[in-house]
Figure 1 (cartoon, helix red, strand yellow):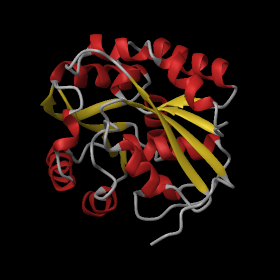
Figure 2: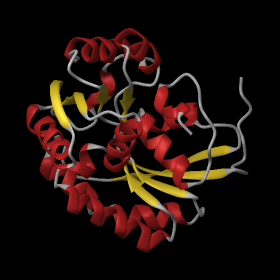
Figure 3: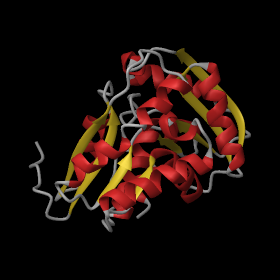
Figure 4: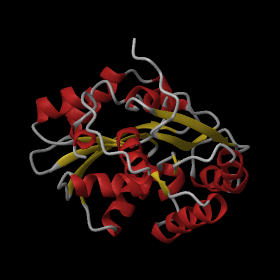
Length: 243
């Protein structure tokens, strides 16, 4: 078992939805030696996964950033994909600006990590896979299109309950992504930080012959870049080997 480091290289901060059970374990699994993972949780009152609830959750950003800033992280990621794309690109950038103003640390969202990670892999024509309902999935497609990507195919599982994305096993995510993909796409993006993905990314890339990026692999990649840690990480898809 790998010895846990003490953050001597970097301390990575993540803001995660209060109901998220997947993001933190996956971030810890991907973190290289000497890098530690720390989180604060974002609250909201509703039990549905929809635009209204995701917008309400963002209202807890200031408190959560102040809380995690106490341990002086080297970077902070707002680690919720749908919670950062649902109101468009300007709203996403405003969230990042707010986080940086409060913390003084370099900050980004998973949505920004998604776009930059796909660009890093040379992906412009995207297969989009999500656990969300159709409305939220369509909003993600719209966001990608607004950032000059082309969504050539997509599929979703229709989850409309807050936190319900974590009930799916990695093999189910693999099958969903593989069935959604088309020859026209340059790569696959699997959305949601509460969706178990990192076990299957490498196998999916081998079987499809193209990059497969997930919300959590992109978030880890972006957080390490912001913290100036440049170490290729094997086993979780091509993106994390691109340093």
